[in-house]
Image 1: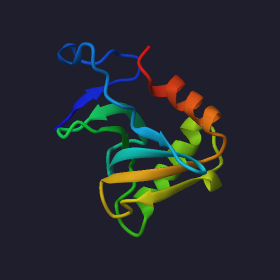
Image 2: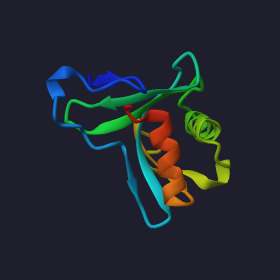
Image 3: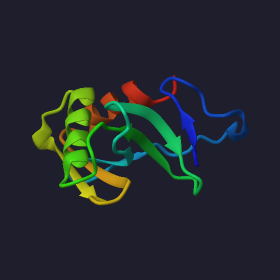
Image 4: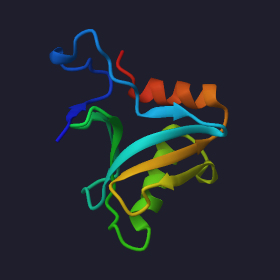
Length: 124
């Protein structure tokens, strides 16, 4: 299991001086976000940034929907759209459709998308 870092909190003391890369990166059409999705998570929420055991950072998300027939993926897209104030048409599952670790593509102006993500999740 990784270390969960709630929004607005500094990284654990053991990482002093070394901040892991954020879970998002720029692409040709916008941003790609690494997400770890927990279906049937009891509530729909983005729980912050988590560092996995291999050192990668992911955005931790949970949805109430079951992982059948794309329900959890649709709930994830709706959740991200709501949290980042984006139309659902600008969000797609780009990789990992049947896995917990997914890549979510956000289309749009890169600077605006980065600002929204950093405002919501980056340590202050």
